[in-house]
Length: 66
Image (cartoon, rainbow, N blue to C red; front, side):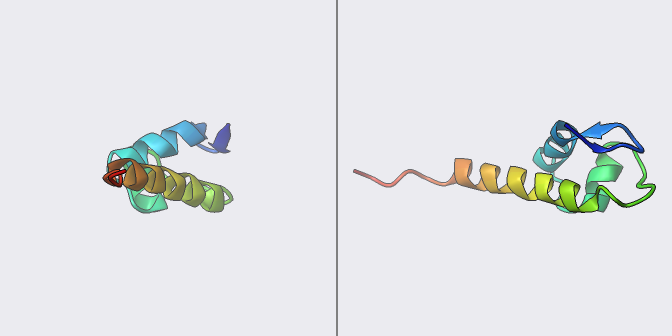
């Protein structure tokens, strides 16, 4: 889905930016070679980044021995 209409950026774009190391919305925009315009996307972009980082952290956790 489109998150940033001004720059035509999707949730997948912000997820990829987070996977590449972006921790903030500003870092994500920089990684995507874009600049924020109106700011309406910040909450959703922030959530996309947080979700991606959580998924990466969970994936990197060792499994408990059975």
